Length: 336
Image (cartoon, rainbow, N blue to C red; front, side):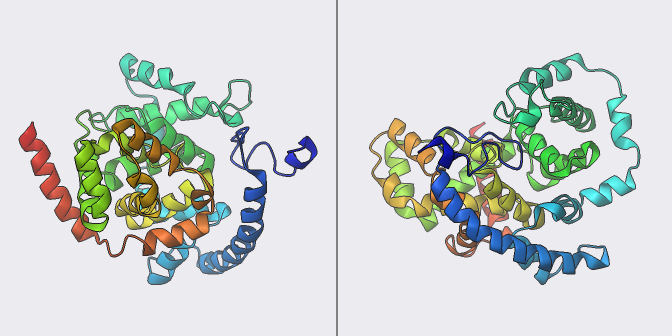
């Protein structure tokens, strides 16, 4: 592609991420020109909905959220739907108290180690940028480590907090949204034993066995552990795995409908690429296939992708997920 053509799509996306060298400008332009029409239409509807000041919990809001929250309203909608706004209102000054609390050198070192590894491809997180978001990220993670000492800091939380900061542009709001995710929406993902994370990977395995039996049988035949394939999907909530806009659309629903959304996304990715996955003949081969399925136009076209996650996997209630969690958790605990 000629350099002149290349420059039609900005080298840096709206969130500060540099587009990779092999970025498919033509496919993106084609997708974005039609998506822009959708975004404009949604923005008008959302502005009308939010005129009253609050974000009501209703069937209309659920439908609106599934179709995407416009960037200018995203922070506010996430804060309300996740319960983070209520927590922040009930605890004025708490965040700043946490930052002034007793020092914990071990926690500080663990966070500092990961700062440079967090989004090296994002200009806003570079030390040469002023203001550099690394300081904000450090504060949010440090405050959370003091707030939830059972978790402290765990790798993966840096990516999640980083995205929250990019969307809210607000340290305190990012802290309360991180608390909503780590403390309520994702049960026990980041504690030292990571029991919730291990449980949910097994739950996905059970769902695949029922909904996509051919893939389940292949996994069993090859003796592949789900953790090898999907642990980063769960820990990072698809950050750095799927395109930014797609991740944000997933998070819109995650804050409103809870953790079952992660299973919907995972099942859709696997179902859509079932034929490709079934070609795998070894463990390295299947690991490679699982990397391939998170790339390309299917995941870039976020609007169609989000429609698919609610149709492709079929019904998936929170009650079903809770039941599977119970049995998988018991099995893991029995294994010790």
